[in-house]
Length: 88
Image (cartoon, rainbow, N blue to C red):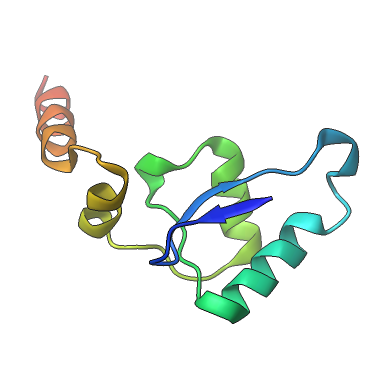
């Protein structure tokens, strides 16, 4: 299945393990992208598998601030923590 917010932000893509590698996720992505236009989550919102999927599918990534608002993520707190971590 492919779950996307009404904005087009991809929230989750999952294919049963025994069906992976058969083009199912690509077909879901292409159909949903044609219908509503999809956007990948920013880096902070993707798993390593999500990074691989985004690279394989291509397409645009949603703006960090917009994505954070949709999923309820404290992007400013995240940025502050990363800046603090980088300075140490």
